[in-house]
Figure (tube, rainbow over the protein chains, first blue to last red):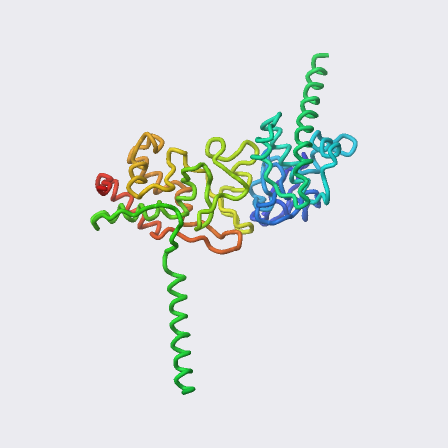
Length: 164
Length: 204
């Protein structure tokens, strides 16, 4: 069956079984390897990406549900030259250890900041429930608060520029 | 002697085979750990019995918690990852039910799914209640979402999330989830007849 997928702003018509997990399509068909396979049970969150801005566990999300929607992966957040505030915060706080689960955490954080621009520790505890075997949670918490600041600064800058 | 032992072994083998086939085909008889008491009442309340047997099965009860924590499995353990009722019975702001649960079961991961996957409203918490208390709550418009009997019949016999109980898919280990102890058809019949007869709750 042909499915039209929009990933990071690009349209991809793909021939695939509609029940295929979105993660497999992202990694194996579109060759976007940033999103990781962890448990395959929607439990660890390594495969988290955004569908229409909402976080989903792509290992447990049939590709047919993404048709006609905007899929965003870690590759679609920012670039090395112009990182997304969440990526910038992750760099500043030197969050990753082995790094495998980090894209999932960053995507979950993007979804969190979209819904709660200035999250409290409680907000973070409730919403960021991915699993990191290196236990980088402490640095992640700092990075999430920092990402919130950076996002706010970006918004302020945009508002300022619009005034000029 | 050897012939006797061989004969005994054959008989035991056949018995085990019969038992395993019977076990596979019988409805779920799992004794859950939740404090749901069964009052004694007469056989004329058979429809009531059938309905409540379904409503107190884990496939239903797990999403009717009294403590805002969804439950999982036949042992009704708290939902992993600290998931709670959250906003509008659908989890938290950025990590909600639909982060993992879609409108269908997922056979790859074992994550269950059905349309409008969510907890029942807090007013419809059944966990820990007796069968009669559950029935009273079901009929009480102040707790049941202001539903009339007609609307309750529709909800119980047509809502896709309610009917998911008979199509619960496999768990994370690929094992079929247990079904309510009454078939979907018999449950629907019982619902329609019980309400048709005035939705009488047996006296306590």
